[in-house]
Length: 126
Image 1 (cartoon, rainbow, N blue to C red):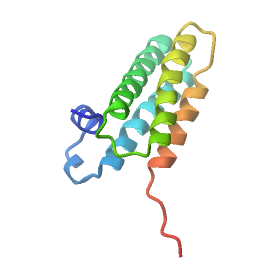
Image 2 (cartoon, helix red, strand yellow):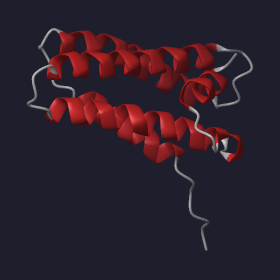
Image 3 (cartoon, rainbow, N blue to C red):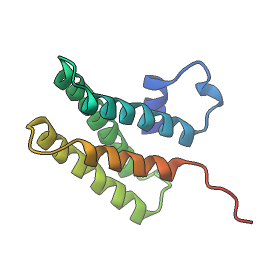
Image 4 (cartoon, rainbow, N blue to C red):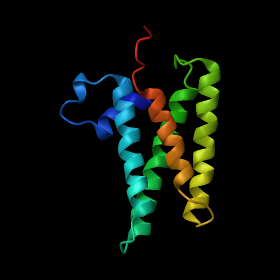
């Protein structure tokens, strides 16, 4: 089972059957990134617990992505796979720093946002 199918099974709504794999990946990144952002901005009691849950889900997403990237059947170019794999490793390490209050979550939000930009459909060049 690759990352696409795991993400679809975990996060799919009723309309997921009509979504492209890129759209599903985008939706998963968007949902987790929004949760990271909301938890980071929260001043509510229990805010750290919510942040920890969002960080855990983000780490799981990147671990799943890393597994998919390491699969020989992955069709992405080798250089892109290597860069994304590096980001997955960085995300895992940086998450530990955020949980230890040694770093801010903003870097993880920025990484996810950049990936989301890459997943968006490209406009046709005229």
